[in-house]
Image (tube, rainbow, N blue to C red; front, side, top):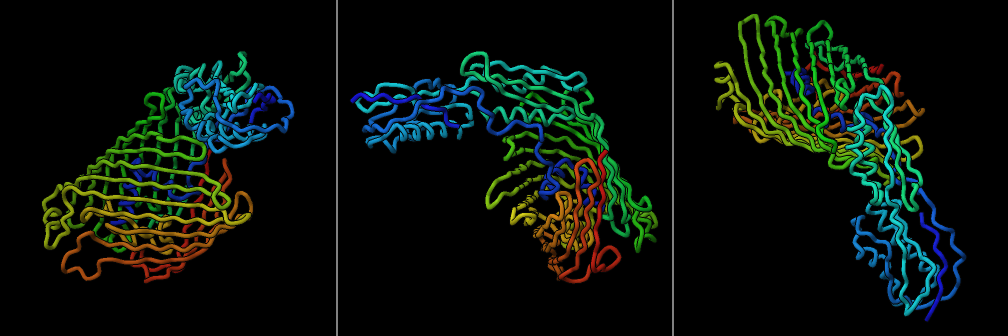
Length: 562
């Protein structure tokens, strides 16, 4: 049988413990647990499916002739796309041995094109060329959309060398099909470099069937400032706090950043500062960094007579690597090695306690945007931490030994996890679910425990209300958008924790649960002021810290970026 096919158109103690924890670079994971606090995707990133650079010829109208399809041969498969021909044959196998029309062939070509798209090759097209069909054998042509010329334009003043841009884009090889996932990753890695603003465009290449890529790199503000006021402190350590931050983007014009953060609490009861530096290593997204932090406190309230003071010095080195970097899905591998030197004193009685904690944490951070049930955002963070506590004064060491002490000295391990889901419900209405947990290998020092109360936990209680070795947190919020920048929300928080992983035989109360509910308001506009307010009523027993029970308990914060 001989049949001519038409041409195919292409198919298209306390608060101090938490302050010290904030010094560590792994604080990133905790911040990502709340979808609203998560850093959004860069706006200047490439589209997930680049526009077709060059159209193929418009076909003639398909006829109605039919024949029995015996096989399909794909012509133009170069082997550079990593798409096995077996997958292409599987896409058309359903029609082999059946009577088909030209319309059926077009549908089969569309299925073959879809196979390429699942592998990230959005520009590859499969079409049915003009041909004589013999013995039911049909030829499909594959246009792989090879990458042509790649041009880079770095604006004057942009703090990055053209060599770094070129090597980041080196995964896009001229002469090979343009892979959408690699293209997207490369552009996002460029946008991750502080101080620059990359943009890209694709166009028809000079050679038929090729696509040219142009990347322009502009400059962003090199100095960024932030100011925050909140009441997240306690009566004894200073309830109202002011925090200032400064980032110098790309000080050595290599995509690095230098950061300074300072926090002062009411009455100067607590002061905290951290200086850190981070730089890219290579051109695949790996970043390493280090930081030095110091916190000092002087407690008031009922402790004032003992003149309690303390100081903590923290040094850390860290790394971060994007295993997956896409507009809708990101997966980072992160690690940090830290050293904490902690000293607590009761000046009135001449007592001093000294500790050193050293540890290594390894974890992952996942964030994903999807269209499930109308769309949503999911984040997941997990970290395994292995450390060692060295008590460095004889009296504290004696008090720590069993049977009267909790035997916290020595090696320990803990697993921490945070989860969050922001789900579309209806126009202006969304549902937020969040949770976290910690599991320890033994009794932990106060500085390594999980806090179940506070503005990032059960909001009806003070920070440090319950400090647990093993515990969990959960929250649910129903959010209503008054305007794009303003929303009201109602929430319910719950938590439960064991004070010690291995309590003593004489301990009667070994765990505690906290519950709370309330309402809140959030106002946020990029480049302007961000405000957050929550009012919470407890659903369990009275608070035992922060000077007694407050019902309701109000938390607020105001942030401004400059």
